[in-house]
Image (cartoon, rainbow, N blue to C red; front, side):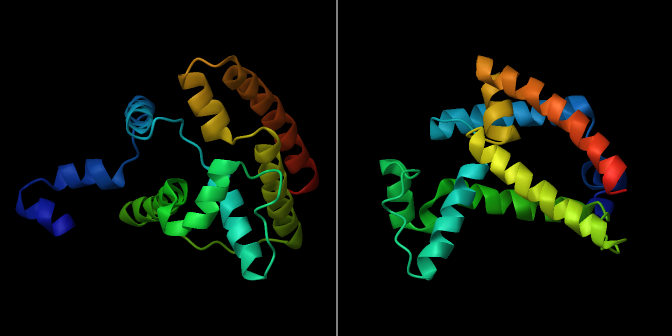
Length: 181
């Protein structure tokens, strides 16, 4: 792709688009436009963690467990489970986010495999991931669904989530620095 821009005499365009990070304002504007488009096209808020519950349910179903009677799954969630992965817009969007992040990292030449420094680092990563996942399910959303979509739709719960997120991040960073660094 770089060769394409260089042939057009636009090497600086390639540098600006693919190598340099977006400014905070440009990133905020891009997120705002994507959020508005999501509301307009899908008639609902942007969320990330709910499809992960479906992913877990599909994996559990592979082992013969019937999850359709579980209280968590509403009628629409049961339809999602019945329709499968490829018919779930949230799952497709999440896969797009994962591959989009990888692609952006590769384009910016920032992909690195880092050496794990200690077992404590592994424990911190596992505990942090489990706590974030549990918290996202307890809050009925993650920082995208509960915070970003909540505040964008002027929901009071989004601002409460933001306050709790800041408090949790403060104490979490103190614990991380004290016990895992």
